[in-house]
Image 1 (cartoon, rainbow, N blue to C red):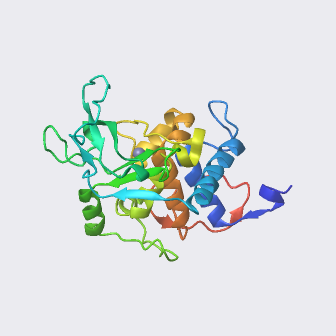
Image 2: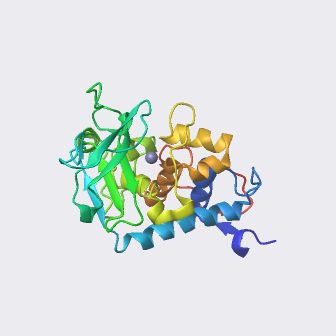
Length: 266
Ligand SMILES: [Zn+2]
């Protein structure tokens, strides 16, 4: 009897891919929540393909601070009519009209790099605003502390070249936290301009929506949430890029050996 794709032996990299996928999105062979495994795989691959295609000619307005937001509009601007909400305020987007600016924006205090009320540095990493009707449909902000942390981090992976083999025991989180590319992938999946209905959210797990432990927790609780959480996707893409290692537990291990197709997972 032949196994996967009619083969008797499955290469180690395919086992690694399967186990990493299952950690982040639930089992493929026995889907929970009514999702067939194949549908889940296709949904993730489709999201990746749509992102790649969308990036071809994409214009992004990228900021490293909140300086494009002003509490005051130019003289003569009609006041905004947004009702007040706790924890947010309406700010004037001072970017040029052609870049989708010159309008009021309601912004939550906690997505500012520095909280405008308390002046404390917010733990915010990056924020994406997406406006499909704009000439520049994506506005992305990566806060200065986040960028500085990426430069400071001890684990740097040059995403422009084939990545190196990591020694055993490096956490995927430690690569993720220092990776501007992974942050950008995470943020791009928040763009409904790029992804339409497949746009992702930040879905809270135990305490947050970010990192391996939260992603695995989210996948255990709800496969639907795992499919819609941005970091589950970003972590999977990162693990696949660092494919000289096996990342199925969230920590770098040696790649599996090729093995008979019916070998059960470790
Ligand atoms: Zn996010």
